[in-house]
Length: 308
Image (cartoon, rainbow, N blue to C red; front, side):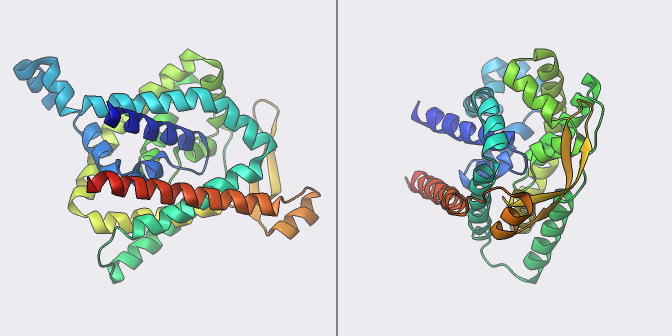
């Protein structure tokens, strides 16, 4: 019971992270110590389950896919998304600097956490780190498109975004933003549009079942190299999380709303002079420290659990 409660709480954190563009639920899974277990559980969904069902019944299938773990984690993710979608949407509209600062601090601390998992980083690790950084940075500066919002496209976008979500450092929400469907999905989750949600979930399931096996295979056989790339992903994603951004170019989406497509990252003083708005520097630094503290707390809690 206690184990399920802890998994549920970690699911809450993953769900909260997945709602925000630029933050990956995979990052939370990693720093809370459940990443490898999550990969293994999802990868267990294959054609072999049919044979397991015939030989051992539903109980055998449930055991093979680590059903208790997945059920508790999924419950936490769904709860978090349902409760926090509107809250985070409001926070990003009215206190965006605070939100981005918190997640910036969280990811900075996560970089150090994941890199420490590599026992003896060599030249190859540093090269892979640079490669991961370049890939994530390139994604972060990509220009969002005003894509169709038909249900079939929601399905396709979900299958792509879920692949990013499972990787620490690459945000599935940010991929949805690039594909132009993030506002539609957030609105559907916040207000219970089950048609859109159904298509999104279907696409996400397809993406998971086809992508996670490859990630799990690579992670189990090349753990240090994979960790180096994932650390690079996190470093590259910091560009999209920098709080103080000045919009250079905007575009009108299909709803007639102006959305930024090119933004410059600037220092707080420049932000104030160019936008005429307060930079909230002290509050933002405090939020960054809070993000770092949360990672350190999760790392300490996970280490304590493992040592028992």
